[in-house]
Length: 568
Image 1: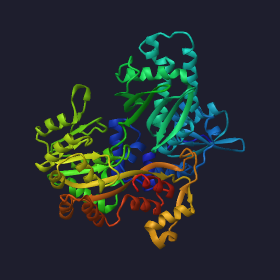
Image 2: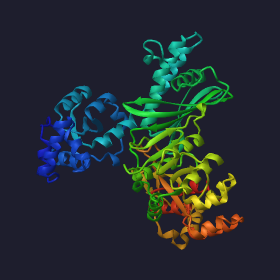
Image 3: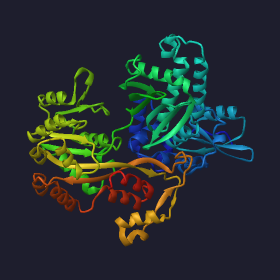
């Protein structure tokens, strides 16, 4: 194929009717002001999609547009181009035919990139067009760091050996410490965790090895196994980074630190625990560059979304979100706060830790070591004349009573509680010795939620339910069970062979009506349970999970897995 010619993107988009003259003038002015690429500006402004730009370029140059969502990559071909060049020139080797390589470019008119890749690959090149977001996602998947992590672990093992290592070198405080194997190993582990969308990193010493696992979409995956000898060095370095006591190895410790991974700010919560073979370290990763989701994007059933918005906009009362650790409770509360946030309202949050940062909101980090506890901060917060208070968790009777008293006396209080479902939540508050009248007067709504994995759209295929799955579905769908089409993920390079990519929410709701307030005031909790079930009319977490199965969003197996968490 001949060397490409440079074309003007703005003129091309005007010519193909994708942009108006006014939109182009706006984009060009923004380009002069910010120095960013024109294509990125028009996409971020919502004038045109990435796919439309790529297809317009492909049509103009008479070359193929390749949708990488439905492309089966050949890793050995892709790796012909080093990762650094693939990212720099926004290009990837797609396939090979007749001794020629077909290379997908984000900008096929980039003459410098074309010449440089021809030199690196030493082959004739045929051009194709791909979108930037799909290309970067493919590069992230193919250029995995597993081998690099194992290599760095072996390098650290060799350095430790049987010869004493300088304390400063091990901790990364000596000159040139950024090149120390323990520092490079941890940096690579964090980069790979961010690339794979891991929410947690588990560093677990075993009898003869050190196991590093990532939690991805709620499920743990082994990343690498290394020599057990390096476990103390990694724990020591991480404790130093988080300001923990490096001499204390017999007691659990908790801390946090902030790092930058490829210019992405990440807050890390760290927990260490002494085990039989050494200190186990678990880190929760909070990616600060990830945008806060709005309530509209949480996949709530319309009825629940409408009632939640209505309840949180009341001038007073309490709204509780319940579920196990990692079920998305904080995300839901912050999505509600983002909608309530305005210059007319004073909002204070009391959290441990502060997981999201919202401008205009007063956020307080609890610090148990200096006696900055939930109840102490909450008492002070109420003297700050707030309209809305978010309490990270109702941990004990004192915190619950202060929060509920605030809800009764003119404040909207949002919080979380660890219960299995909505019906058990008011009863749990009573078990915490919160006065019955407080629960009845303050509680406005309880929302329970779980997260289920979403089927990878790149390898989704029809699934015939097994007999036990068929019977489980029949409980909710009745005779309609055979009228629906069910899907599962086959497993592909896009989802790492799991068949899933990403997670979404499953919900149930209980709104405290006058009938339920009377029932909770009764000494017989069975009366409340019966009234609550009648009000919910079967709209449970299980039914919402089945809704996603019928829509083809998740698998029967995944719906059954999360349902078993709350069924008797």
